[in-house]
Structure formats: C-alpha cells, structure tokens
Amino acid sequence: MTISADHTAQHPAPEDQMPGAAGPGTAPEDAASEAVRKFGITVEDYMLPARHQIQMVGPDGTLNPHTEQGTQPGHEYSLPGDEELLAAYEQLVVGRRVNDQNSALVRQGRMAVYPSSHGQEACQVAAALCLSDGDWMFPTYRDSVAVMARGVDPVQTMTLFRGDWHGGYDPSQHKVGIQCTPLTTQLLHGVGVAHAAKLRGEDTVVLAMCGDGATSEGDFHEALNFAAVFHLPVVFFVQNNQYAISVPLAHQSVAPSLAHKAVGYGMAGERVDGNDVVALLAVLGRAVRLAREGSGPLLVEAHTYRMQAHTNADDATRYRQDSEVAEWVAKDPLSRMKTYLTDRGLLDDDRAAGIAEKAEAIATQLREGLSEEVPVEPQDLFKYVFSTPTPQLNEQSAMLADELARDAESKTEAAK
Image (cartoon, rainbow, N blue to C red; front, side):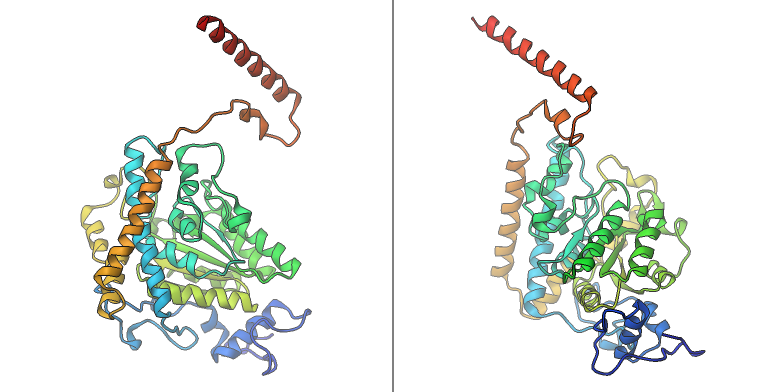
C-alpha cells in the first residue's frame, strides 16, 4: 500500500474482500488499506481517534443527539441492544457492591489489600461483555470486577488479595490472565497469546487492559510495537483514571490524548467516555470485531476516574482535592445507566430490586468465603519454586519436615 500526498490509500483491495480477509501472503498494511476502503476515509482519519471522545449517554442519563456523540466518518457507532444494556447494568450493580464490600473486608483484616475500581465499573463491565467465549482478557490488579464479569468465581477472584500464594483461578479455564501487580507485564502476556493464536489459525481476540500510568512503561511500547509489526488481533484498553497512583496525567504525557499514541505504531486509536457504558460497549465491541476481521491491533482510551484511594495503603488527599472528586461523582456510571434505562422503560422497581438482591448475595458469598480459614501446607514453600527442585531447596524442605515431625512428636508426648 502507498499513501498519496493527501493521505489517501492507493491500491485498495478488491471489492469482494472484507477487512483482513485477504490471502495468506497479504501484508499487514494491505489489510489496513481494506479497512480504510470500507470506511471510505483516509488512512490518517482511520488511525487517529475521533476529534471528540465518543459519548452516547450524558452524565444526566439522557441519550445525546447523534450530532453530539463525538462521531465522525469512520468513527460511527450503533446503540447496543436492550438485553446487552440490561446485562451491563446488572454487572455494574454487582461491581459497585463488590467494590464496597471488598473495601470493608480490608478494614476488617480479611483481605490484605484491595485496589478499588469504584467509579470505573463501566470500563470493567464493557471489557468483559465485548468478548466472545474463545477470546482472552489480560487484566490489571484493579480489574477484579472485569474478571468476575468474565465468569470467574468471586472468592477465587479475590484470593490473590487475601495474600494467598496463588492467583485463585485457572487462567486457561476462563481465558483470563492472572491479575498482574507488576505494571504492564500483562500487555506482553496478551500479545504473546495473540501471536500464538494467530500462528495456530485460531479465531481469538485478546483484550489487554492497563491504566494511564502503564503507558509510561517500556513494556507498553514493546507490546504495541510487536502487536503492530506482527499484525495481531489485540485490543489495548487504557483506562485513563487521571492518576498513576499520585502522579497526574499532565506529568506523564503531553500527547493530545493517550489514544493518539496508537498512530505512532501504525494502529487505529479511539477515545471514549469511560463512565458511559453504552458508548464503551459500542466502541470496544467494534474494536474487537475489527481485530477479529483482521484489521490488526487497536487502542481504546477510556476517560474515567478513580473515586477512591489507589489502595487502602494510599492517602489520596495528599495529591488531589475533594472538589475534584466531587466533579466526578456527578458523572457516576451507575446512576447514569440507571436513569437511562428507567427513562426508556427497560428498568422498573421489581427488576432493579432483583438485581440488587443478586449483588447482595455475591457480597455475602465474599464475606463468608474470605472468612474461612485456609489450610496451610508448609511444604508448598518449596513445591512450586522450580519444576525440578534444586539441592538447596531439597535440603531446606528436609529440614522443615524434620522440624515439623519433632514438633508433632512433642505435642503428642505432652498430650499423654
């Protein structure tokens, strides 16, 4: 593919080919050319995000006029179906209840730490619902609500934050990577899975999640560059919640938006209101579809806000004002969606009560599950370090076994 002086794609694919449907020898840029042809726009307009962020439902819960949704040619979106919206609202309610319940469990000492996504639940829910059963999600440590929405048991999801030695669930069973505490490593994991799936000819899309702070890491560059060069079906989903712990976005990047970073890697970017679950479902849904059709990787930036502290160990009052937080309370994704669905007649009191009851049952499940004593096997300290234990580990394991045996013997003697 070549680009003319006016940025128009030359040598487009034949009319009977959809984006990414070209033959085995087609270069990645040819697939991008097909996407450009399909949307009838320039390569530049395809890769750059829309001039305004996509927002379908405003903070007051009313549907924006089409002319005020931030769309433009090549960046146009249809409203999700009613059942999809109701399913998303249910997950929003569950997510908010789980966030608040987990914060309480930390204060009670039943969890070691919890990075709350209170206020970011719309991003979490949309990320899970836009994927098919065979797709993969790679979450961050703040994406517990997304992991649960993907179908992972709530107690298993929170096992990591209780301080157990394992992640709590089987990634291959749920096609959800273990929540990563090291910043940005999950993007590389996601790209690796997408590369393997492509080599095997699988119809798999990977959604790799990160925050705004992760875009300052070298792993972010490596993941995006590799995905673009090898034309992998990855959607990079950046939840821009305005702070990398205490560092505001203005001290991380002076790019027009984080979505604009996509064009530097030769992929398309988009920015969306991260508190508007309707727009999120539309934007992420299209991104996943384009990736599956062969248009290559895409980057979606969601503008949202972390309403609570980074974790229970953080004092957010040291770096932001209460007035700033109050501004975002008015943009709350849960109340916004409830108003929208109620006004449309899709949500009544009985249905809302049933959803709240389900959310409370999950909160109860978390309280009871995280209050149970976990059996401890001391030898697990050595069992899962290496597939073949080193001589030093074997020696240490034997010393511990001897100490435990002598301790048990002394207790038996004392009981006689």
